[in-house]
Image (tube, rainbow, N blue to C red; front, side, top):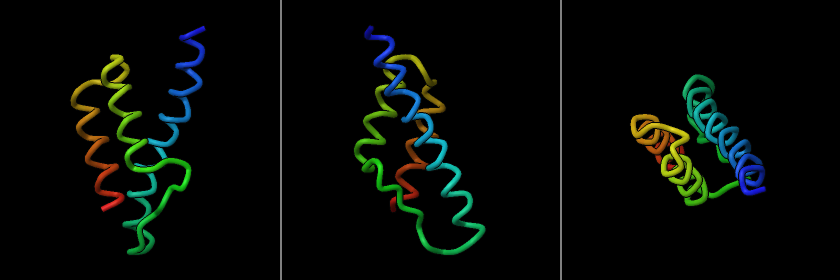
Length: 75
């Protein structure tokens, strides 16, 4: 059961990370305005990312890259 709940949390988190990265790439091509994702705060995104790293889902290199992307998007 714990794994099932984790997967339910992980899938939206991964989708959010992918959307964050895509949004930051597209916003640079389309306009100068920042893309905001109202479904999760920056803090929540960073906590989810850290949990994925601590649980061994992503590597340290991926963690560092994604963390920078999340912070840059909301900077």
